[in-house]
Image (cartoon, rainbow, N blue to C red; front, side, top):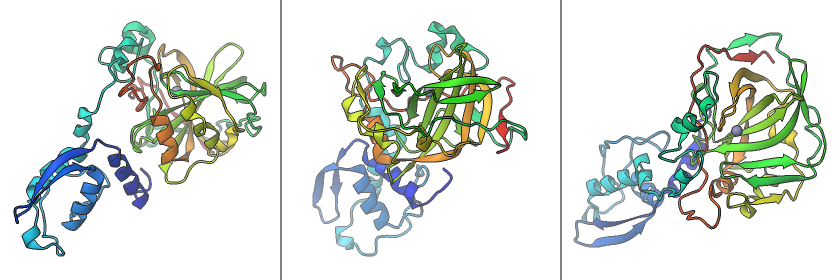
Length: 361
Ligand SMILES: [Zn+2]
């Protein structure tokens, strides 16, 4: 993540707070025992600070921890058995503890999924052969490898500033998708052809440092928005926008996050109840971008898609991300435990000789 400030540290901590609560017994030297449920975050905060650890929540905690000094303010007679504490602590906060979370039992009943054992991304091509194609998306965008095009057209979004007065949002089991119904043509020009905006959907993760489909210099952002357009020949152009997790809500996204609690299950849909201004979800207009030819990132993975991944990064509130993370991939009548839509991003696909163009603007 670009800024490794206290904000990120706080957000990572927030994620840990969402992890499962454990139950431990703590023995002190004076013979007393403390037992009961302990929130991993609270546990971390109090004890890691107390013994002056030389690392922070930035990045993954080391597997081995050497304790540099005893807590100055703790009475030695009341000292906990620190090594035991940390054995338990590490189990709680390392990502491997996520393996104990409830997994969605019915992922494999779907045609495809992100997390199923039999129908996950590596198996998509068995049912949808194009997913094994050579021009697939998403890809890793590495700025050291891109070709800068001084004459690249500016990506001008027309009518994106007109509020979407009427729009439907649906939980389609893989994402939340917004489709305008106000008959305003919002368009971009690509290679002399007009592409009209059709729908907007999102890919997000369970943590602030995962969620986006593309990566930019190895950074995976908390969310990637896809603005999907088609031209008269049904060719597809997608504008992708990265969003970084933030403590402040994104005001423009509020029209969407306000109604997410109303579409918790697959096939639920509702009209937006306030105006959505697409321009406000874009980093700038016209926007600098990375361009390449790829595919849809979900089955049937159709190729020939013109990708424009915008350079500018927007912000989205952690609270707003949590509204997305609370959506389920299943209908209400199924066993939806553990079936929250998270990490709905496809793994990176090989470039296979493709070149990524960077617009000079
Ligand atoms: Zn998408």
